[in-house]
Length: 234
Image (cartoon, rainbow, N blue to C red; front, top):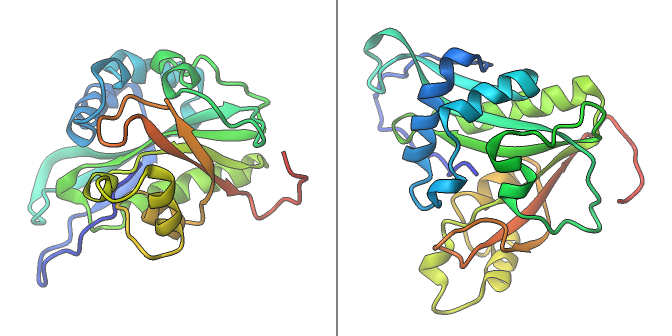
């Protein structure tokens, strides 16, 4: 659910940012990042610091952070700052029956549905601080997830995706028509277009997936397949 990063101004200093596995000490900053990046979500669908600490007990390998050593203008910081998140867990999933609600899948933010033997990585969250977009952090966080899936030999990544570009077109088309046009390349959505560029495919739509005033609770169901594996459908 990462927005497409805007281009950085010409001549702007490039801050140093690295991708690392999340740790308990990042929990408070990750909770604040959620509230900054997803202001449209209902309060009960945002994760708290306690949720992030629980993730460390459930599946620490599945959660990644982007840590900035510099301010957006390149000025060094006294200590690294959390500016991005890529989070998820392992599940078994039937691609032919993708219907599910986000809050139920993530067990209220606890990730208690994590199955160590699960065939799929469920992508619960990707977010990048607005001041640090345009640095390739969204792609780097996706790449970290993909590398984990390949290392573990899992089938791929499944996720629900928001459609922040839809409100601008809501008066002229419904959500299915909008998604069809984004997939065809006729329209650009800040999130879906970025996901498609990162190798995801739209496998359907989810209604009631998440409380989202922008789309009337619609989301895409997207899948990335591990290229190392050959697998049957489903």
